[in-house]
Length: 304
Image (cartoon, rainbow, N blue to C red; front, side, top):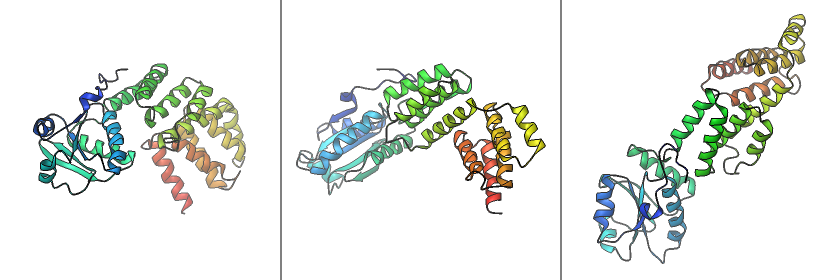
C-alpha cells in the first residue's frame, strides 16, 4: 500500500467491529473520545440494512482511520436500542466525545454517505481524505513550480489509492499537458471514470488540453499583432493573435483581444470569441484575476 502524506490505510478489522451491549461502552462511548465512531444499528432480517451496511463500510474504509465503525445488531442489543430510542432500522449515529452528534435513518446513496462521513470528521477537526488532500496540494505545488514529472507521479499514486478522485485525475491530465505529452493527456482524460467525467476538475483539464492543442499551431505573435494593427477588423487575425498570446503565457492579453473581438462582432464564426473566452476561463483557476476581470467585462458587454 502506497503511503501518501504519512498516512496508510488501516486494516478493516481495526476500523469496523461488531459491537454488543457488553462492549458498547468501550468500543463506542470511550472510543469516541479519540476518534468519531459511526454506529450502524441493523438486524439480519432487515433488507435496507443489507444494502446500507456494505456501502457504509466502504465509506468508512475510504476515510482511512479518520472514523471507525461499530455494527450493532438490535435483536441482540435491545437495551442499547431502547436507550437511544431506535424506532426503525437501519439507523446510523455518529458518536464524538461520548455523545451522538449526527445521524440518519434508512439507506443512502454512496455520495450522501461520503458527505456524512466528511461532515462528521470535519466536526471533530479531522481530515476525511486520509491525507490525500495534503498529497494533492503538494502535487499542485510541484506543478506550479515546474516539476511536472514529479507532480504526475504523485497524482498517479493518489489515483491508486482513490481511483475516482477528480482533483487527482484532473491534475494528472494537466501534468502531462505541462510536459507537452498531449497524446497521453488525452488518453488519460478519455479513460476517466464516468462518475467524475463531468466534474469541474476534469472540465478544467479538458480546457487546458484544448488550449495546448491550439498552441501547437499558433502563429507568430509579431506578425499577427502587425496584421491586427493594420486592420482592426481582421477578426481571424485577432482570434489567431489571442491563441498565440495564450500559447506564450499571456492569458490576460489573449482575453483582452477576445473581448475586443466579441465587442466588434459577437456572432463572428458562430460566436467563436465567446466560446474561446469560456475555454480560457475554465482552464484557469476560478479566482484568477484574469478570469474575474474577463467574466465581469464579458457580462457587461452581453447585458449592455
